[in-house]
Image 1 (tube, rainbow, N blue to C red):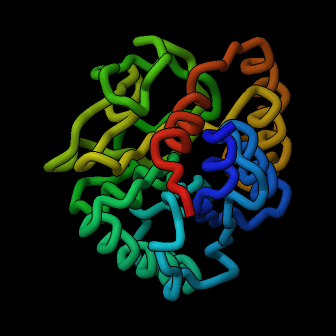
Image 2: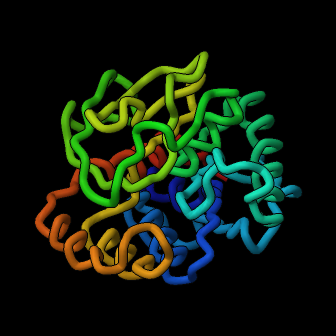
Length: 253
C-alpha cells in the first residue's frame, strides 16, 4: 500500500520523441506507458519536431526516455532539416545536464546514436545497420540492475540505418548481437542506451511496418514479407528494461 502511494506520487518521466507521423508517435508513447507500467500522468511527452525542449527543467522528472525515429545523427549537416538541427542542438544541451548530474536516461535507437555522437563516438551507416526484424541479443554484463530478470540471450526487435561503430570512451558494453556489436551501453551509473527497441512488441512492429511502408525505409513490396518474418516471434524480455528503468528511478514528488 505504501509502495503504491509512493509510485502514484512520483515525479513523472520525460519521453522525448521525434516521429513525424502521428500513428507511429502515438504507438511509441503507448508502448512506453504499457511496458514502463506507467499511467498517463506519470509520463510527460514532448514531440521535439513540434516543440522546443530548451526550457525543460530536468529536476521535475524522475528520468528521461528518448525514442527512435527518422532522424540520423550521422547525416551531413547540409542534409538535415532546420527542425532536426534545432532539436539536436537542444539534445546536446540536455546531455550536458544529464552527464553533469548523472540523471537517469534511457535512449532507444536514435537515443543510442544521439548519445554516442555527444560522447564524440563514431556513428555512421558504414557497418552494422540492421533491417527491420528480430535479432538475437547477447548480454555482456547481466549484473547491471536495469537487466534484472532478463536472460543472457533473448530476442529483440530492431531496424536502423546507422550504428555506433565502436564503444565510446567511458562507456560499458552491456549487450551485443552478431549483426551489431554495440546493442546496449551504460555511461556513469544511470545513463543507458540501446540500439534495439525495448518498447517494441510484435503487434507494434507490424504496425510500424505498415505505417512506414511508403516512407523509404524499405521497398513497399517487401512489407508483407517483413510482417510475415516477425509475426511468430516471441518478444518478452526487452520490455523489462523499461519496467526496470521506471522501478529503479521512480522518485517521489
